Image (tube, rainbow, N blue to C red; front, side):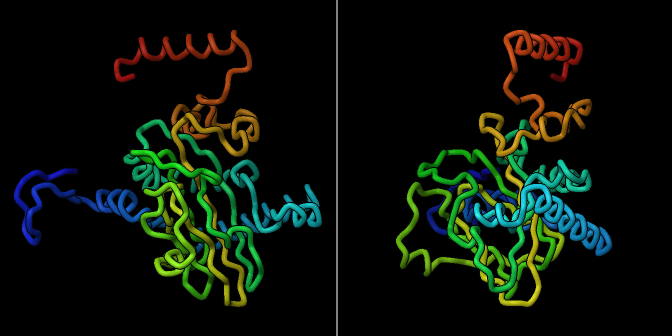
Length: 282
């Protein structure tokens, strides 16, 4: 929200952002700094359950692909697409508080591009320990965000546990900063268990070193506008589940998946046409 009236506490300023509600401040933090923390509102029992379920998904994927093969590609500490294995993780992907912030930044039509469980083991190397963007290999910026990440903290994020560190404001610049400046501005983001670290996906960040004796776990989500392809096709992975729920179908990518043929494309267009003519709000 923009205020063009005279403001107090500043000099020569006639325009400033106004944050009337908590969500306004979250959105402003992401736009300017690149990152904010959103409370999840889960109970301790629910958090324990999520942790057990994520461990089980990783173990299942190790059995499916093989521990040696996962380690060979650097993927042995990642549980990919957990919501396709356990519907409990859909609760995280569709979290109302997170989606409210995401939609303020990306618009109403957002798609879940990826959901990955991340395990930061004590004193072990991890691919996420290198600076990166969640839209990797991109050296450009846009006037409006194209993707927002939401890292769900299954364990407390503290400096000692290997909290994610960010380079504040780096989502606004094409190039990675010099090594000296990166070291100077690198900032750990501490967050309580059960909260989401929500950030512009173009923000440079990395996992910290876990100096405790316990694994630090998280579930990362990347939400995008429907122009960016999903990392794993959720409609294919889910086998049609949730496609009859209009809101979830859109979030999970059923509405934005490529058509399989010209007839399929025309059938989809016909369905949308019928919905829009029958519902004045469309």
